[in-house]
Structure formats: structure tokens, C-alpha cells
Length: 100
Image (cartoon, rainbow, N blue to C red; front, side, top):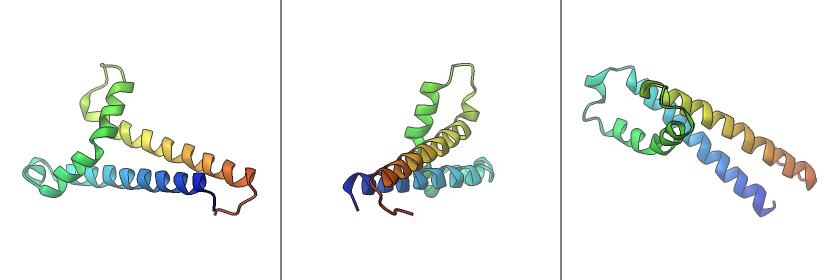
């Protein structure tokens, strides 16, 4: 399999991990402040998802509340996942390689 298709597969897998981390962070958020304070797992999820939340803050206007940023980041990650998938499908059909 060509290198660029493998690279897109790896990027798509990393995007899937980021989406799962955002979902897990949302589930942990439901536990309330006592469930999040001092929780190592929540701190790990926050550190892993912070680049996407910062990207969402950079894209969104200042009028958007910080509470909504993780949900917006999740939507951006899902859109990025679809875009990488379409790019991978395009490369596979352009090279007549069966990737899926």
C-alpha cells in the first residue's frame, strides 16, 4: 500500500482517538465537579483534548461561551475525520488500490 495512504490512515486513527477522548471527557463532565477534581484520568483527557479545544476557541468568535468549546471541538474533529476519509477514498480510487 502506498505511503501517503498509510499516512492518511494513521492521521485518521489519531483523529478517532481524539474524538474518543472528547467523548470520555464529556462523560466525566457529567459526574460533576467532585468527580473531576483531582482525577488523574480527567486531567489526562483534558491534556489530550486541549489542542482541539484551543483550535475551536481560535475559530469561534468571542461571543461563544467557553462551556460550549468541547462540543464545538468534537464537531470539528468529526468533520476533520470525514475530510480525511474522503481524501483517503480519493487516493485509493485514483491509484486503483482497494483500501477498505
